Picture 1 (cartoon, rainbow, N blue to C red):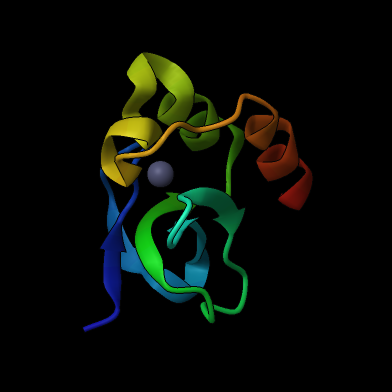
Picture 2 (tube, rainbow, N blue to C red; picture 1 turned 30 degrees about the vertical axis):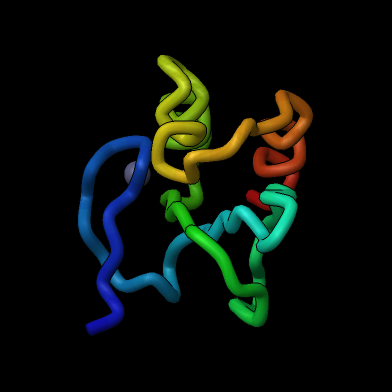
Length: 81
Ligand SMILES: [Zn+2]
């Protein structure tokens, strides 16, 4: 079972095709978890602008990760596309 739900649009798909964002333990540093080696609560996003923008609206990403999400992460994610 490797399907994950996108925080932006709610679509469920294989996590290989998604951006993984993790609140790294123990300080809840928010990292883009490209190789999935970092342990912590994670959120997934499709590789597109709309889902990234949506994830930052209404603090959705923050709610999923249960951690403060730095605003500069959005630019970083958009650069990953
Ligand atoms: Zn999506």
